[in-house]
Every structure is written in C-alpha cells, then in structure tokens.
Image (tube, rainbow, N blue to C red; front, side, top):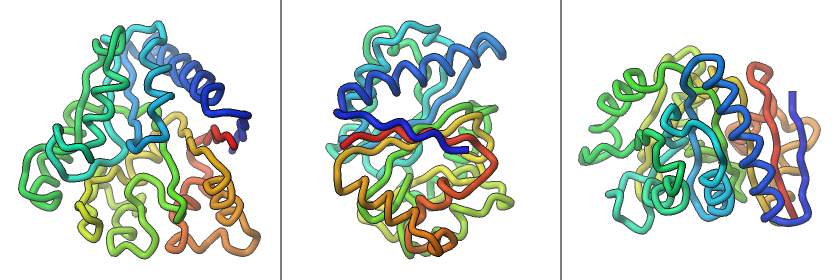
Length: 232
C-alpha cells in the first residue's frame, strides 16, 4: 500500500516527515523497548534530519544506521555518515546509537562480512527506513544496470548488506532482504526533475523493468507499507 504525501515546499515536507517518523519510532519503543531507523544521504534529507533531531522521543532507545554509504572515511566530504553526524545526531538525537556502514576496510568487498555481522549483532529488527531517489531512478545504492542489482534485490538471499563496486567511489548498501523486514518505508524526494522521474517509474507496462529504474522494486512490492513524501 502506497500513501502519497505531496507538499508545496521542502520545509513543510521535512517537518511533516520528521513528525511521522518520530511518531512511529516512539510507537516501536513503547511496544518493544527500542527502535531502529535507516536513513539515506545526499543533500535532500538535510532539512528532514534537522527537523527529526528536534523531535521529542526516547532517543537513547533508538539505533540509527544507513541505507547506503560511499566507501570513504567518515571525515571525507562525500561521507553520508558525516552528513548524519552534522545534521541529525545533534541535540536530543545525539543520544541515539549510530551504526555506520563504513568500517575502515580497504573496500566494500573486504568490509562486507564485518558490516553484515555488525548489522545482525546490533539491529535485531529494522523498523523504519527513509530512502531517497535519484534522477536516474536509483534508490539506496541500487543503480540501473548495476552488476550488484541481483544480489541487492534478492529477498531470499539472506544478506542484509551488499558491496556495490561499479560506482566511484564504491559503496555498501542495504538489501531488499533487510528492508523487506521493516514495518514501514518512506520514499523522500523533491523537485520537478524527481517528480518527472517518479512519473516515468509509474508508466503503465514498465513496472517489471526494475533494472532500468530500481526504485520500482519499492513501488511495486506488497510486503511493506510505503509512504511517499515529495514536493515540487
């Protein structure tokens, strides 16, 4: 089931998305005693991060991880972990436990097993994930035509993360095998270009062409409720 939430501007979008995510996190805490959330990088979620950091909830009971990460040091300008540290893990939200995907190995293939083990050790249940979308129809590090796509989208494969070596820099990404276990997924994007990409992804007769636009793997699945948060 997809819920389409459209806003006139990114500020209203960020505010409402933050409130919705915080509400679901608190519900998980009330039910299980803790909650977990995966977030994306890039510039689009910055306002959302800043709004989410201000939300009142038991942050010390929240585990935060990443949807994907470029395989660079946490101080590198391309690091999504750096972005999260600067804009989300501030104020009350600094009490959350942060589990980055990058672990210092030479490359994602070398770091895969350590990353996989840490996810299994520290994220017993991924409750929520907020994903973005590129103008090419990618989400997470699921890129069109990538040799890693079959492994990334293999629900029965079992791996929770997967190296993506065909990008520069190389990346580590969560897989559908893990995201399919979430209670709720969010897809967050802004701008006319991204809305046009979304319309392309929804073209009749093209729904099964996931290799061309991997975001379709989220849009046309039935396992997890999906909320769209988008603005012009």
